Image (cartoon, rainbow, N blue to C red; front, top):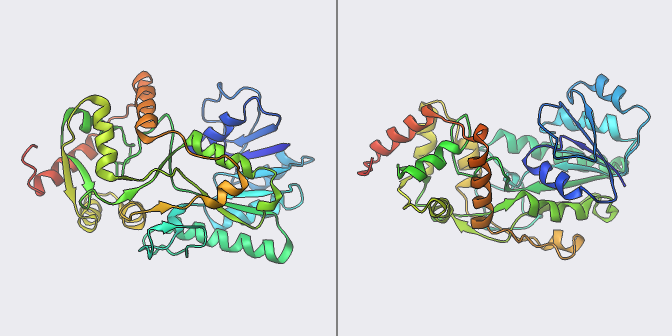
Length: 337
């Protein structure tokens, strides 16, 4: 099977790429060549600018694929360009959408692929919804062979998942937990969330590759484990053998305070993480027999932290966000500040 990944080295795509190593596939990665891919041996890499359609067409001239997967299409313009580039050279086009597209506020915490799509809080989600709608229309009208995948919060080796963080990444939140400093948690910390390790996501995803019964269909792929946000942060604290020092702030207030300090939490928080979600993975399990997410969060995040501790380049300091957290904690009267 000949496969093209547009991207292939991001958090979600990296796990799939690693999963395919040693498998009987011809995988080509098309990206800007800005990430270290030495551990992705055995695959062809094409370096190019995804947003330059003329360059892309030249790079792809004479090639055909069984499957094309776009990990970095975010707008209607992106998918329309993909349609023009791939409609005659692939048997399946897989679009990576997002589970944040599901209706907010939620009408039912148990989510299936038929849950309505609507997100007034986050432009990112609305753009993905528009992409899905357009792709399914050209599937119905012209037979364009699209399969749509909606990942939720997926994590890997290089970043610890948190509800909010600053512009530089989440490591400063981890350090605050480790040092016993106040850690901001939205609401009362009791809303449920699902975190999926990239290697688990990959196990479900590969069942879609070249599986033509999935054309015209939509799938989400997540873990079946649901944790409260307090539990999530406590698991991180337990990794360091320390007690969590939570600072609970209502999601609305946190969004307003963030805006005042230059942080846009509205989309990712009010449009996603502040809502309790439980995913029904029955549909992906039908096409990926035996798929089950086996990496529990306490196991996966422990591996992530160990990896980051061994690779200092991912230990990114963020004094600006630390200052924001301190100010919020002081405002909320956190006595342990």
